[in-house]
Length: 382
Image 1 (cartoon, rainbow, N blue to C red):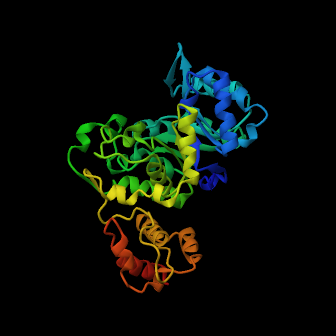
Image 2 (cartoon, helix red, strand yellow):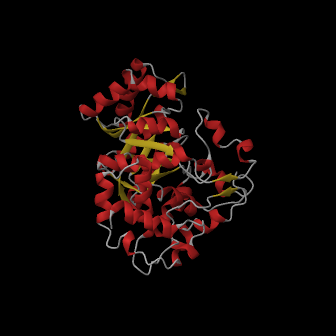
Image 3 (cartoon, rainbow, N blue to C red):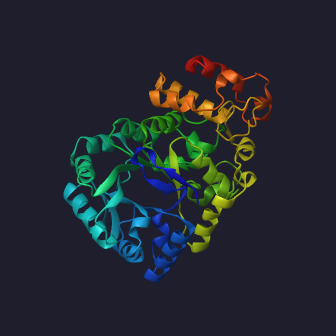
């Protein structure tokens, strides 16, 4: 298992994390078997959006004696009422629900306190100006949570939250189909068939700006719905019109800027084992570039996907990294100091480009790489 630093939190999280779906409707023994396997495989990041008390209690028991080996992404605003899940912004219920969550999990703290399911700007602005965010920040100041997070499917909301400076971690839906959809406050729009009837070309600019802004500001991203609820693995169900593989979807998400962990929505141990197998998958098995380039309903013409097909460069330039740094600066409209320093650490920079064009012949998306190298060299001065 490989690990990544989750933005500015300093937390090391496994590239493959665990969504809590697999713990639902399971006995304690089954939940413990999941945790045993996760510990053995090195899966350390667990999302806890569900407010089901039985799930939380079973997980708390399973974590006993090894709690410190896991990063818990515990949700605020997700509560249990009358035998079912409910999202709330009532601060009394939020506080009571979170304290009950810690009690059931048998822990005094959570590494991430995730403000649950914010898909409208009005909702975010009410949270940002009210007691919910203040409570989350209070939890962080007191050490009850190590970082404040927010879960959303809406790039417009997520971008405003990231820019607020209060959100350290973003839980966001990332996959090749959703990334072409414009912002919407209705999550159903992400998979509505009507939105895929006409060919879609290139990533939605707000989503691109979101990933690049999170990278620049140190807001780490944990990924939900990397498989689109499993639809992307089926040629019949996929809105792209053609099936992708599990490893292609995971690799796509992990190559987006700021992404640290993909949360597997595994409902069985076999499904979790399959996701963990990504760690040992070959480059060929992970490669999504040719598959995306061949999708009948989607197109990324001219858009760098950071897939690495441009390599090897005769001059030794890491073209994907240079392009990523260039795009970060374009999004900012300036050269942030952190980006400049990371660029300076590259052993071979854009100015070394020979303009041989070998990279462009290999790029599945027709990216003007030589022009990008020229612009990067001018921008960074080398």
